[in-house]
Length: 287
Image 1 (cartoon, rainbow, N blue to C red):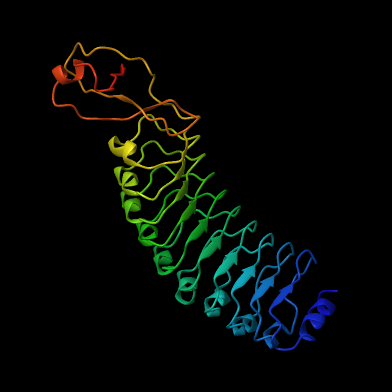
Image 2: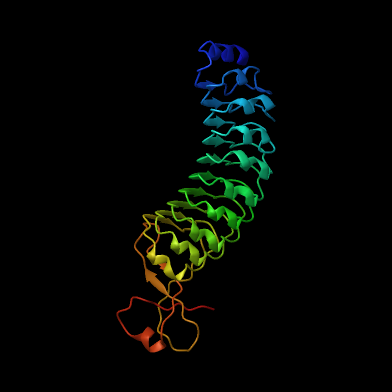
């Protein structure tokens, strides 16, 4: 069946632009794809593929490749020869590793979807994807983010929900075009101050982490949506300062229907200042 579908595509001539062979239970890529030099889009999702033939690297004009829901255990190295590739889908596989060599030939990539795999780390060489705008890494086993990832200044969306992250690099502030950052359902305890440098950030999802308090400059962000439920936020009990200990604060930040008050750490010049009315800062009892 797959071969017949491919033959029908070939009848369109060398200029055939798209081939879809999804859901055919393929265990290997059909022969003849390399004879379609004009191919722009190829879908091989929902099959049983473990690898790709070397010949596939000859598709020099391919812009979109969907390999989702197969059984790849690593990102195929043949992909580095697809120099025109802009969108790569590898979701729903069993990928545990990414060879740094992959990034040598994917400079034009703008979308990378690796959701639902088994990745535990990302190679630092990922910074070579300098045109990347959308990266999806939800539902993996990532324990950290390499600081090199933060040099991807064209990135607009970064999805890292449902991983094992404990921290976020301070260098995330370099991602100046980031508009959406999803970090929900990790183990993050502290958000870096660098996060507050993301002036274009509009959606921030940190729900289901271990965050108690937010960075001091959090209110400088122009967020349209903030999700922070299921975090152990400091108890919201205003009180007067009666002892000279570290002051924590609550500031009203009406930026989300999910929360009315965010606990934000701040610095005051004196306790006299703190007890003066009108500043909108409230102390928190910290055990």
